[in-house]
Length: 413
Ligand SMILES: [Zn+2]
Image 1 (cartoon, rainbow, N blue to C red):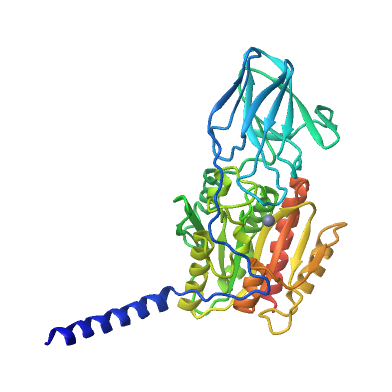
Image 2 (tube, rainbow, N blue to C red):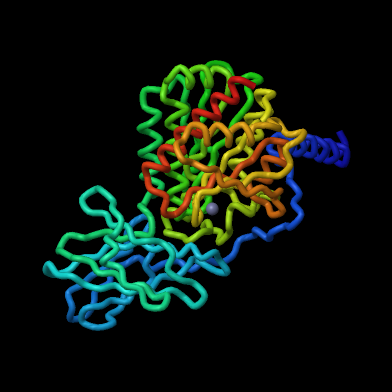
């Protein structure tokens, strides 16, 4: 074979190989009215350390996963300044903080929170003592203008103070490993890949028996690290689907569930206010997939659908905001489940005492998951938001009943 022909043949084979590979892994981009630049932006890392206040005998540490403390200074003999900064900006005012503090001897001490200009205190402090969390007593919170000071009774053993209960990537892993234990016949814990900093991106692949042609439901959570109340609803929702009740058994015979328990493990462990390690709001990357967390999840979902010749029916993305709200798409006709939203909300009100659904409907213009479900799959996409202050027992109830009613509706469709 002449050298030029040989090169041409090699080149052609390379091209064929390239197209085969790219056809397998290619992810179709999804267009949105208002694109968002999701290429990496710089983040400022915290210095992990133990801070001590000179001459006072008070200490603070951010040396653990989920911590956020950017500085700790003496204001006077009874007060410390707690300096909290976001990972980068501009950013939503999700002013997350978490640190441990202790003293040389038992004593009370005051802590004043300081945020950069333009940001202010948002979350009521939660305290971890021994292994349980509680909300700080309101008599220990002092407000002057928008500046918050709290009083803590310190001892030589550290108390953890955090904006929300800390649920690090390790905590999340312990949780899903525990709930899947003994259910290996229908729950497979898989990995869709690695985050920017190499943390695992897990998915629970849940189905009873064959997956061929089974319609798929996707659950997502923790794109935004401090949104722990949304994660609690996700936990309650998922636990209800796998609780081995008759409803659950019937449901998992017919449907295939993909549940992503931690979409942004780097942001969670780094104590970020909102972004991932690439400095990006992941819930704006559901268009061109610049960030590995979204790219890997979307690839896994699409690959699962293709392999099983399945349809994506419904995507629920669990978040937190100021109050409970379901963000829905206005467009319902020609989606996989045109009446689902109305049916679901009606049955939630019927089955939760004194509960009124708060729905805000608008078609996504920015690249969020709810829009990706709609424009990318003609599926129903819902952002399932729980209030920052919604009590745990209400979250548990809403999560459980919303899962039961979803299963009922899908089994009767
Ligand atoms: Zn969110």
